[in-house]
Amino acid sequence: MSAPAASVSIVTQTTVRPESADAFARWQGDTSAVVATFPGFIEQRLMPPHPPLQVDWVILQRFDSLDHARHWLGSPERQSRIEGAAPMLVGRDDVHIVTDAASAARTAPVSAVISTRVKPGLEAEYLRWEQKVAAAQSKAPGLQGYRFEPAVPGVQEDFVAILRFDSDANLQAWLDSPERHALIEEAAPLTAEFHTRTVQSGFEQWFRDATPEGAPPPPAWKMNMIVLLMLYPTVFLWGLLIGTPLLSRTLNLDFPVALFIGNVVSVLITSRLVPWAAERMRWWLVPAKDRKAAVDLQGAGLLAAIYAGLILVFWKVL
Image (cartoon, rainbow, N blue to C red; front, side, top):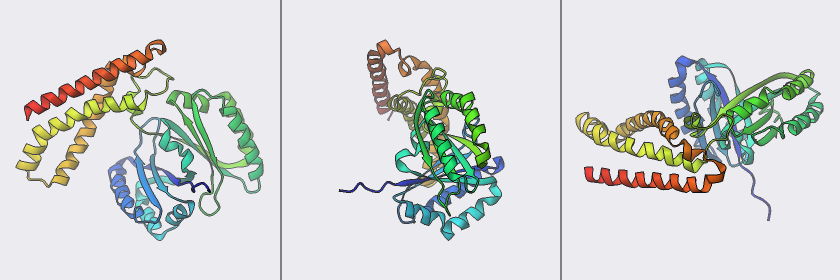
């Protein structure tokens, strides 16, 4: 039996004028509705900037095949959408196609997307140089994965390398390393244009202060438990004190509108509460290796008990 065809992701990175951030977010929402009608579309994710590490907007559009991804990239509908966004942007977009098995920007705490425009006729020599870089960076601390995508004529003119690291510090250490700078200088005669953009995703940004410098982020299940610990009472109290009595009854807002406002406020509040809670749960998030199993169990039990307490209290309130 032949293996199923791998899905692909279109990774678009763009710089938006600061005053146009809200308008761009709305524009992207409309674009999401358009791309969702195209054959083979699976999902879309939008990652706003997180300065200073990630200064660009990153849009990931996943399709079930390369042909369907190309269909969207070359469609009149997409071109029309791009023309409408032009006044909001600074410079040109970077558009990359990567196989889903190594979609670094979706799976790693921090990634670097490196685009290189190679001078005509020097592609084979550049590929040999790329092998040297891959061998060197394989020894870099914190490297979780590496993917190299050649140019796709007529669709993607750049060669693209995607590096996945376990932390900001380890990624930056490799990018700034003398070994890498020497390799970049070696490739200068082969390249017409070269630049690097970094991407961060997930809840990791809320746990930076609770994670030792250079260490990987806490396990996803621990971060999820703390986010839930802060999100549940926030959503409940908002609905009890403001959402239902003020937005729904007094202002008579429709449920979708009231729910949207509540979600926006809840996310903003949670983004402030989670770092506070993470700092107080540091002992559990990053336990000593010799006590990890026992500490993991103690912390999970403590949070489970708090969950139960909150449910009981809120039950009595109602």
